[in-house]
Image (cartoon, rainbow, N blue to C red):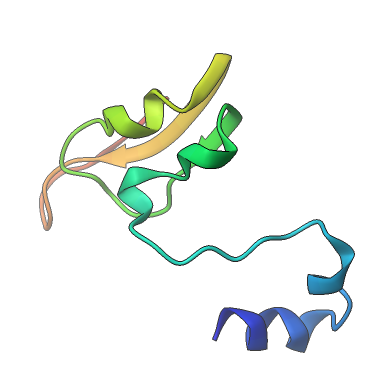
Length: 77
């Protein structure tokens, strides 16, 4: 589905080498490409995701909504 969505927008984007599609548990990040200058998480985590923090470069930033499912959440940097 990811490839179809990208191709619908720009058929050359996957061949450009600027994108890589990875299937897996996003809560664990992608350590083989770390360190990252920035990680943006779109889905809320119940607690601060330390596995993602550990993949940040020095001075890197993690932006993540934190809070219980169905409860009050806040954006954390």
